[in-house]
Image 1 (cartoon, rainbow, N blue to C red):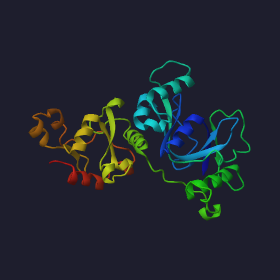
Image 2 (image 1 turned 45 degrees about the horizontal axis):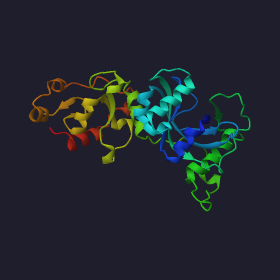
Image 3 (image 1 turned 90 degrees about the vertical axis):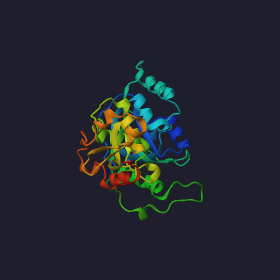
Image 4 (image 1 turned 135 degrees about the vertical axis):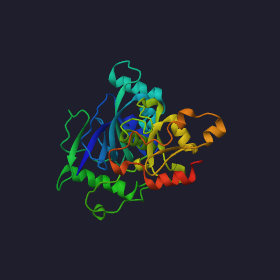
Amino acid sequence: MKLYVGITDTDWFRYLRSNDADEMNFWRPRATSQFKALEPGELFLFKSKYPHHRIVGGAFFVRHTTLSLDLAWNAFGTANGTDSLEKLRRMIQGHRKDSEYNPIIGCTILTQPFYLKDNETIDPPSDWSGNIVSGKTYEIAPGSEGLRLFEQAQVVFSAGYPRTPADQPEPIDRFGKPQLVTPRLGQGGFRIMVMDAYSRRCAITGEKTLPVLEAAHIKPYSEEGPHEVSNGIFMRSDLHTLFDGGYLTLTREFNIEVSKRIREEFSNGREYYALHGKKLVTLPEDSSSRPSLAHLEWHQNNRFLG
């Protein structure tokens, strides 16, 4: 098991800490298609830059992907570490030293963050070198810096952040040996995980133009539907609207059903009725990521207008 210590922009971190964000996009100004330092559920620690040079918090790794800047904003909004798209654009352009308006950036998706106050930070790795540009991976092994960092961070993420001096965490040894955390997706993470599970294509039509594609919940989050890939389908925005409105659903065999109410209420819908009875054209390769039959049944019984 490993953890990663990433050099972290102070303004990015403090903005997210002040807003108590529950997920974040640890973006990189240029597209980096791979991040092999961690497995999902492993720990990502934030290290401030010199001269402060401290571990200031952490979160759990979900996934790394690439997105255009505007799509990263649409997915994560202020969880990108600033309060507007234009500010994010300026931040990224400042790092890239170019004027590309909508560049492709690297997106490391993190969840369940914990934030340390300025007087409660953790000593950085003793072997940290000043020439490290982005970060370093540490094995969590007996007697290692990785284990020391994990144990000190574990006090915070296992016991909850101490809000007052009296709220001291219990001793480390009660938490047991290091183990993976099952990442709890936020809205942004849900969108990206569903998007990549469906190979960035509409499940119904195969459309690949990302700005018009959305991750739809089968059972809405407002109805206690989880942010899980098996509760999501990637589809064109107009189909998403119909799906949420009950004018379209899926059978257990992943066949498309279109409600007669479209014609009755709107006197049209020819394009949509052409989809009736067809199977999804795109499904996740991982069977556990495919639409949950229980969630599909909920949608048929509680949303579909018949």
